[in-house]
Structures are given as structure tokens and as C-alpha cells.
Length: 281
Image 1 (tube, rainbow, N blue to C red):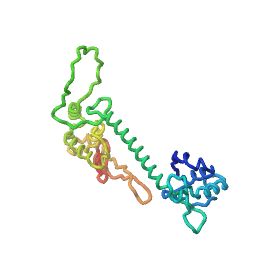
Image 2: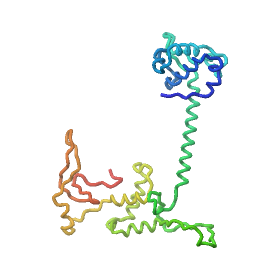
Image 3: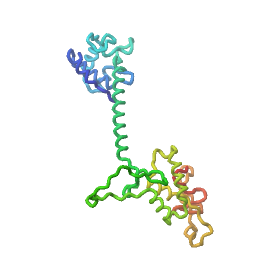
């Protein structure tokens, strides 16, 4: 619960004419008002809520109900508040609440856009096209057969005095290194790259970028079929193992305990609970 107090309030007749109780009471009404500018409360309730003595609230309300010919906005003859109903002596509506609410909303939207534009410019300033070995989370460019050549570069005569620049690995070299890694020998990396690009265009991606870290996590979660024709020694570590995935059983959880039929990236699973890679549901 809050309200915005405009500086113009201190430049009008609430200060120059008074009484001061009207200013204090008006500030409390602004805070207590709903989005329509209504304060459906008795003077005693306002006093208890704000901890301001009742006699100050009563005197302030009486002054705010009086016409003011010097008011900036001559609605309701310059009255600050009017009664909500003729059948009861309590409950008020702030006359100019809608006018100042529009000003406040405009100011807040303007401030929001300033913050948004500042953040957007900062993100663009720090974005890069190449992959630096010390920061694997920078977005990477799509693979292409040609590389852009820097135009207009000048060769300095004293190269030995120039500071050494950090080594930057191109995407093509890094991707070739991944494809030659024995850990990914059973995976078609180029096909998985196309899958990554397609998945990143879906709502599930939530704005994620194609980075080195993302690519490695994707490849590490690719399901490689278990070779049942392999030498028995390669499968003996699965013998006798059971699935420990927790499943619902009434009001309790219990382990599955079904026989393990395969292992993906070191994660054993049964036929009912296969391990899913990122992007699957």
C-alpha cells in the first residue's frame, strides 16, 4: 500500500491557506485510496490505521470538503474530496485522483523504458561474435564455409611492441575438435547441431543461445543405444541392478525396482523409465 505525492501539492493553497491538518489528512487518504481514488473508511478507522489523532483527521476532512476557488482543477468547485454517499457521513472519493494517476502511470512507463533501453544497450555492448576459450557461455555464430575478412586493417611497423592479444578459437576448429573426441565417436555431431538449432527456436528454449556449454550439455545427453552384441564384460556391470526412480504409490513414494535394461551416460534405467535428453518431455 503506497501513494505518490506530487511536489505541486506543496505549492498550492493546502500549504498557503491551510489548515495544516488538511495536508496531513490528504496525504493519508492518498495512501489509503483504492485504484478508483475511494477511501471507504470512517474517520476513526483512518485514525487507527494511520496512528494520527482523531481530532486531526476530523479537522482535516472538514477542510478538504470545502470549495477552493483557487484550485488548479476547478472540478467539484475545487473540493479535494467528496462523500461517496448522501446516506452516510463517512467514506470519500479523492476528486483529482484519476488525473494524477494518469501522470504517475506515464512517469512509471517512461522510467521503465529508460531502464529497459539502458539494459538493452549494455547487453549489445558486451555481445561478441567469436568464441573465447576463457568464456564458453558467449553465443556462437552458425557454422559457414567462409570466414569474414577484416577490411581496412593497417599493419603496424613495430609489431614487437604491440600487446599480445588473447588467443581466440574459431567455431570450425572447436567443432572439429569435438567431432574427433573419442567420447563423442558414437554420435553424429553435425546432425545433433541441427537439432540444437531447431530446438532453440521453440518456446521451450526460453531465449537460450547456442553456446559451447549448451552444445556440450546437449551432446552429453544424447541417448546412445546400448550395444547388446558387445562383449559380456561390457554389460556385466548392469547385471542384478534395479531402477531406483521414485514413483507414486497412494500417499507415499517408493523405488521402482524394475530390472535395469540399459545405461545412458552412466545413468542406468529400466524399460519403464528411460533417461530423457534435454528438449524431450
